[in-house]
Image (cartoon, rainbow, N blue to C red):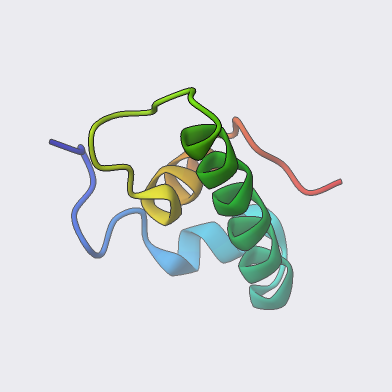
Length: 67
């Protein structure tokens, strides 16, 4: 089970980390697409990947940053 619920990580915190909501949306979308491609290319993330949740967690934890 993920350590975050539907409201975690908080959107306001993510916006502060990234800078603005448009960049945040783009960053989440691009990372989720990368994760999805990895999953379907045979590099399984888990049995039922929730790529948007994973992408959001990675941004919140500082693993993914805007360039």
